[in-house]
Amino acid sequence: MASIDLNSDLGESFGPWPMGDDVSMLSIVTSANIACGFHAGDPAGILSVLKEAGRRHVSVGAHVGYRDLVGFGRRNMDPSSAELVGDTIYQIGALQGLAKAAGTRVRYVKPHGALYNTIAHDARQAADVIEGIKAVDPTLILMALAGAPIVAQARAAGLTVVCEAFADRAYNADGSLVSRRLDGSVIHDPQAIAARMLRLVTEGRITAVDGTDIALEAQSICIHGDTPTAVAIARTLHETLSQQGVGLQSFADTLAAHG
Image (cartoon, helix red, strand yellow):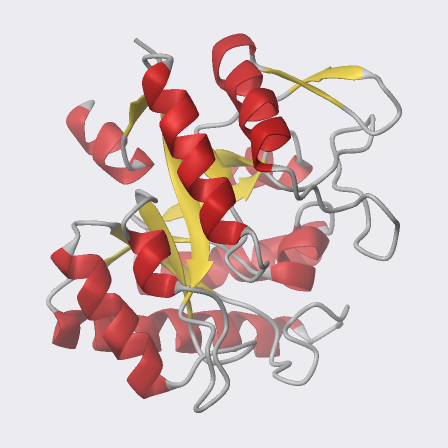
């Protein structure tokens, strides 16, 4: 039986400004990418989400990003290597401390937003993030964009890498994500999303925005938590996959079970 991980970006509320429905999402997903305070999130809110993730046995990952609260980490930046290595270490360490206090632990790292998209193809920034992860804990798993050069780069550097696909994002024919600046970059229909992700899990293929059929290697599916239909999308996807006999399990647990 095929199995897949469902992940979502959580812990992104800031003080009195809410972002998404973290509690509902934690009842659906198997992995939670928790903000580390650079692109979103505040310590008290992050701690609360970590405690809820621990109660629900949801795997926790550090959602590291550029130092960009105003831009929600979605603006391209060019930090020096010293800055990016340090920022990566700092964010993982902060989440590790909060996770320990919450009774859980950080098991993987998923870069956020512009940093995620940049390191997918920028070997220098990718190397900086990889160095930062290894400096903290080389057993941490890196979650990266399926088909991107960083996958091979990180594996060559000794990291375990899990590839992910995006449930609610449109793809270009080369396997990259359609820019959020373009119409149709985000898909909102829960049924359409569930159908395309079921095909990805069972066939390893997805239809690009131009109609091209492309192959994607993915062990995890991301559902963005900051859209109005996020919970409905997650529930529909969860139900569809379960009904079709697809097992839902954290990739960290799957890897641990296979040694």
